View 1: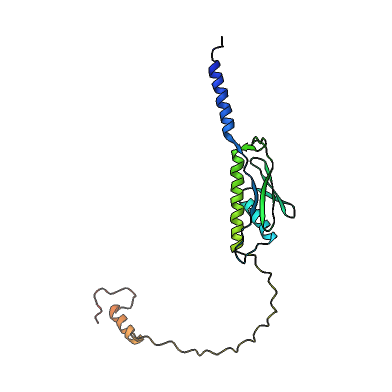
View 2 (view 1 turned 60 degrees about the vertical axis):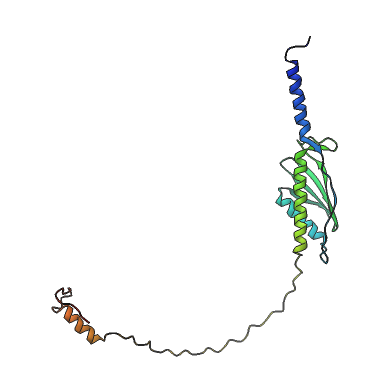
Length: 195
């Protein structure tokens, strides 16, 4: 006779196993992805390296050039390490190791595929931008120019400002006497000014 709860325990174990298996998937492989060239726009090895480094920085990868033609990328959140060998014609993203993503042969947690696909898309975008914005040519120093001789300063004639039309000082004084006959400075309300 089976103990009580046997079916319930078996069900829980089976569901746990399904959840674990549901999180793992086949590891995505990014191998020899061509560096697309547009007519007349070949990228140099340095431009490909710069595109990979910028893509890694934009997707939170720590990138370090291991040797010419190879970058080691580390994604700290999952302690994922990948090697990115590259040439002017192609690049690859190769799994080195990880912690907590249950890597087993070619099986790994699906989050690995997500972050690798994000990195691959970012590299592709940066390479596309590099094709559209080629590296600036090395600028040569222009010969030093001598400043032009100073121009002769012209003289400006100062003219009197134009006369404004209005009452003269005498007319204003007459009006003031009309408004304030005593001259004490207070307005006279009895007189009115008429034009």
